[in-house]
Length: 464
Image 1 (spheres, helix red, strand yellow):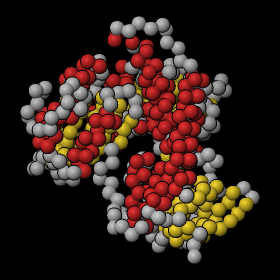
Image 2 (cartoon, rainbow, N blue to C red):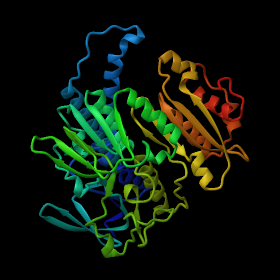
Image 3 (cartoon, rainbow, N blue to C red):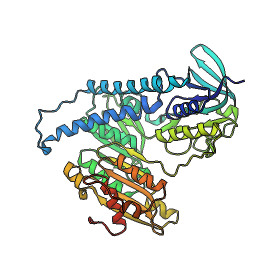
Image 4 (spheres, helix red, strand yellow):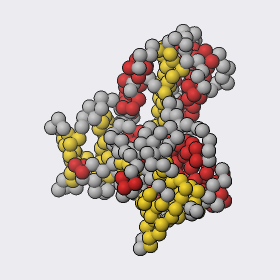
């Protein structure tokens, strides 16, 4: 007889989703988390939510500074950073309270504090300070997540050379900042601190921003727009070493011999997996060459009754991927024959305007031997965008040339994170360009740009 039917290690997006769904399916569930007040994981406490609160403040601040173009005259705007952080903390606390008291507790899920280590495929050692105990479970789900990557040569001191964790809580805005990495983290924090008044330079080792997008044209539009706002880019540049100088400046040494000096460096080059010290190797759980836990399409590891979800598994390190995995694994444990698919996972970068993408680009398709047709539209062609004076950006929709099924969408523009969902559903359901092009969209709305882009791919758009 086991203590629990399901034991989830990690109370982040994947762990909470699997715990709650398992409880709904009648399982006795335990949820382990070693961080005090760590419910919600990185997303709620140190990632998605606090960053979006800060970015919303940046957006409003920017809008107020630009209010005159809307015919609105306001007194000089002033940034109250203390109030911004109070708003951020309140949002995080509210979400954690709701998760703990309205979602987890009512389901009878047992909260277990401490650091977990696998003993075998049914037993877990829990260390909470000086207290050590053993818990048994019929099924174990590993959802330990990730941490900001620490590169030894970057000498991260968490004061002048910082990670995203420290960036979330800065009470003073540096005059100058270098951000290493032009992916989601780098662009969001670069945009944030630039809007708040820093002179920001973003350094990226790849040839263009948002390297995962694999679209040179779109990347050029994004970087061009951000450069016009004051952000500088050094793409195709790798940093070999970072150090604090005697005058309390930070020196970045480039691999090509160049040097950059600044007040603060934010390292935003990715995240390292929390797979060390939890007993994976000891019980025989296989890791791949990237250090990720090897799982099948039902999230089973190589050890019976041990599953894994979230950042430590394949696929993008996104909260919604982890949540979906958590739901799938709960259904699998309950006896359903469901599978995890990674084909349609939209993502967004919440600068202003936003970036969003789903599926593959034309270049990706070409590599797979698929001929494509691509529709493109500028936001300046959309009447609602014109009325809002939000005409920056563009959209691309990619479809197969043979049957016109939509296989990708990439957007840089107002509300891109919302608009991308129509394309995601189209890919998921195998819809064609004609399906979207022939659907009546309300006017005037930003959503019309998706319809018009599909018409553009078919040569039927009013706007060329």
